[in-house]
Image 1 (cartoon, helix red, strand yellow):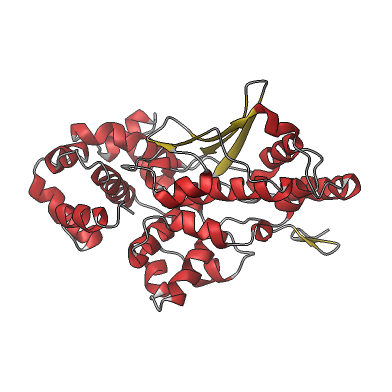
Image 2 (tube, helix red, strand yellow):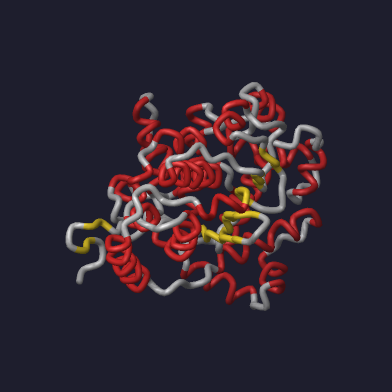
Amino acid sequence: MRSGTHDGFCTIPSATGGLARLACARLREVGKDVAAVLAKVGARPEQVNDDTIRLEVPKQIRILQLASEELQDGLLGFHLARNFDVREIGLVYYVIASSERLADALLNGKRYCTIMNEGVRLNVKLDDRAAAIALDYVDVDRQSDRHQIEFWLVALLRICRQVTDTRLAPRHLRIKHRRDETPAEMRSFFGCDVEFGAASDEIIFPASVASLPIVGSDNYLNDLLLRYAEEALADRPQERASLRSAVERVLPQLLPHAKASASNVAQKLALSKRTLSRKLHDEGVAFAEILDETRAALAKRYLAERDLPISEIAWLLGYGEVSSFTHAFKRWTGMTPRQFRLSFSELGDVA
């Protein structure tokens, strides 16, 4: 049986890229140059025009960041998640929506979430104290993202509300990245304050919600869809750890000490410098490119901390002089760090 369709049911081999497509559609609506955005991340147009073609998760995250800047929307992921039809998620949504109880739905979501996004894992904890849904990133730099994670947290809550036909409100919501305060529209949607700068990305419900019935529960349909979902998992290519992601995890440890050289990174990863270079080349990337992109992503995250001096940010990124950091930042964004911080503080956030 061919992967992708099963007797009329679309499995969507990978929804990775679907969020980038939503962002590109929003850019087109306001007359922005989508091709220029894609060129900046090395993505091909067909990767955001054809939902059967996989887009790497780091590229999707970067596209969302650039789209946020183009649209001057610091809540882009949140807004995209509020407005899309959750049925577009495909097979995984229908597995969830045909389950018997919310607990079953969440556990099914946990098992089959990789069909939707290869870089995100759903963890579900159910006990007599709480029902918790946590999102973990796999081989993806969490520090580089805020829009994708906010999208999925909103989408998950929307799905839970839709399939139970209730206005579920979390008891607590935690998000790893920082914001100065919970935006009013976020607080209104979630029904609670959000703990930013937390140790996890997690939605926590009262324990009682796990027993809520699913309004569209259908045991026969669910059994059928579970078989399709198992086939979709089996059809996925064998996962392979990315050396790039390993380098991205090591760099923030070395940057503050100005020791983020290829040789030092290789030593941390128990490789020779030559082997590191060769393996990165096989993945289609160079060490200098990863270093530059990691610095750019971290710079924007650090600038979100209003009280963190720019001189300290320069040191955290491994620059001996603020002028060197300023020159690099202007190359990345066309603005100085101070201009960037000011322009996005006026929006109430750093995109």
